[in-house]
Structures are given as structure tokens and as C-alpha cells.
Length: 256
Image (cartoon, rainbow, N blue to C red; front, top):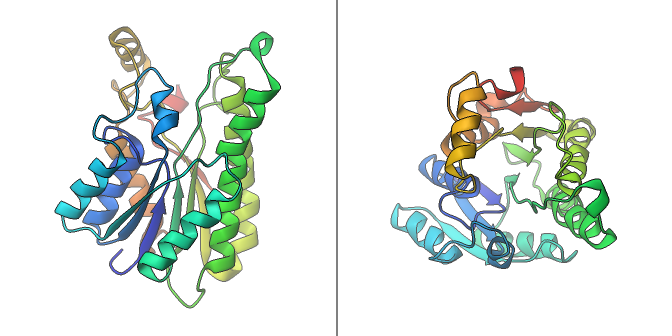
């Protein structure tokens, strides 16, 4: 990844997947534009990172990384273009996009509201598509390693009736992956989708953590570092023949 520039969205909490992905890519030699939106984390039970998004950027710079940090609400339709503007201003180009961000909300059918459906769609699906569009429009096809990685969830393996806005938006990304991949393959850009499975990012209580570990064939939760390994490989030259795939990194959870 040396001399390559990657935008990583949803990298505001040092315990979570975006941070682990950024750490791995910096170790691999990439320059990173970190995106975060702490107000969204603050709304959740786990809360925002106490050090703020700047804490991760500082950590990565201390490790020798070339890192810029941008806070933006991806519910704003202008935010995807603004992220690319910032990356190009800082580094001159963008070689890869890791759309790791997500709005998570627990709504059953009877609890649904149009407002929550619209906001979850805007953040999870619309913003990811607009980010992919910006990447396609701005990518220099003479540069190697054009990569887009998006994220889905486990809705294609198990029913998730308590999280309908979330799973609807994530199912859309799952299905979009193949079409985006076919559209961009002639330009040397791959598009793949990662399902990290139950991932220990600090949101689960001890009872849930023990129950999931017991049910998982791997005997444990996946970790952000597990996800980062897969993303790193998908961004590498070794994965240039892999596109249009949804890959689970979940310790066998989806194979139960």
C-alpha cells in the first residue's frame, strides 16, 4: 500500500473497525483520510470516543502515518464530495475507498417511522453510493490498485426483525456490490463487500458477549483486527482478481 491513498469512513472510535482498518493500512504504508461523525456515536449506548476523532489521527501520526481527519455527517448529500475534496487537497489523489460507516437503529415493523427509514437509508446506502460515484469520477485509471470495499451485515443469513431500517440499508449494499463491480472492472477497479459478523466493538454487554461466543463455531467474537486483515488483503495487489464478492470474516458464524 506504499504511496497509495485510502479514504476510511466511520473511523471515530479507537475500539471499533474503522480504527483497526486505519491502523493496519498505515502499517502497510498507506496514507489515510479518516472520516468520523462523533454526534452519531454519542447518540448510541456506547457513546463517542472520549478522546474524540482526533485521538485516532494522533495515534496514527505518531506511528509514522500520513493522516488527515475530517468530521462530516453523511446524511448530508454534499458530504461524500467534500471528503474526496479533502483527500485530494491533502494527498493529490485517492486510490481506494473503505466505506465502513453505518447508522444503527433498533426499530421493529410496528415502530418504524419514515424519518428513521430516510435517515438510515441516507447514511448507509445513499452516502455509500455517492462515495463510490466520487471515486469512479475522480480515480486516475493509470494508477494501480483501484479498490472499493463496502460493508453489509448478517441479514442475508439470519432474520433481524428488530433492526429493520438498518438491515434494509445493508441488504441494498450487499446487492449493489455485484453491479458496481461489473460496471467498474474494465477500469481496473474492484468492488467487494465485507460482512464482519458479530464484531467486538464495545457495544455488547457481558451476557450477550458470552452467548454469541458460545454459538459461534469459532468459539469467540470476531474482532476489528480480523476485519482489518481482510480489508487489507482486498485492497492489495494480490486481490486484483477478486471483485463483486461478499465475504464474511466471522469465525464461521454465517456457516452455522
